[in-house]
Image 1 (cartoon, rainbow, N blue to C red):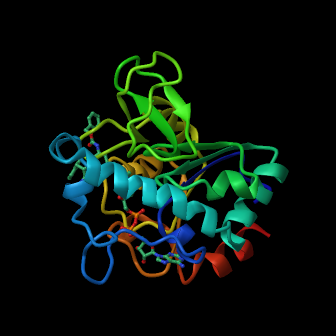
Image 2: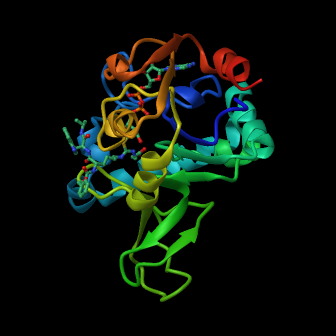
Length: 228
Ligand SMILES: CC(C)NC(=O)[C@H](Cc1c[nH]c2ccccc12)NC(=O)[C@H](CCCC/N=C(/NCCC(=O)O)S[C@H]1O[C@H](COP(=O)(O)OP(=O)(O)OC[C@H]2O[C@@H](n3cnc4c(N)ncnc43)[C@H](O)[C@@H]2O)[C@@H](O)[C@H]1O)NC(=O)OCc1ccccc1
């Protein structure tokens, strides 16, 4: 690790699997019993806001029953000890990275523990439910939605991510199937800019061919080995 100066790490649902957070594609292809397009799109929210709010309220409440695992802890150690540039870009909306202590972190697809006001555009820390249509703490409007990036919506902090990828000398992807864009394209961008590339995943991802090195197995075992 010592000769590295600038590292970008992309994480997905697989890093939280060993903590008990369901990944996206269950055996039935459904996501916790729902088709993704029925709960994670602006159209779904317009069509059935109660279903969508209940879905995210349930996932937000479930966070109290899970804890960071050895992979989250290892990345938090790296974040604490690495004196080069580091950016952890997570597709996950859970709060396990920050609960493990990671700080050089961004949630490109939003966070379960934030609510976004469609009235004033403000984002607020939110621990409770949204099903009861509470008022925005800022403007008072009853227009709060989960602060989650849904399909068809622009991910957060795209510029900051692209700047970090453009100067990275190492790109590591952990626990992601490489099925969703723009995140699935980051390995190509990193390679294009000359970075070394490493995939750590339970199985080969859709983009595994783009990685110079791949280690397949559980993140809870492989990530601490890679960090330490
Ligand atoms: C389905 C896919 C084809 N569709 C897309 O990619 C779309 C459309 C699209 C855009 N560009 C394209 C190009 C080509 C084709 C399609 C597109 N993308 C979008 O809509 C994006 C927005 C996408 C974000 C949607 N929101 C999410 N999440 C929040 C919601 C919520 O969470 O409720 S995406 C969501 O799904 C994705 C799921 O993937 P993973 O995290 O990888 O999880 P998965 O279950 O699939 O895989 C888990 C992996 O872990 C492994 N694993 C399991 N256990 C372990 C273990 N123990 N250890 C290690 N590994 C493990 C497994 O083997 C597996 O490989 C994540 O990104 C996740 O955040 N927005 C956008 O494009 O806006 C326009 C735009 C763009 C730019 C500029 C202007 C406008």
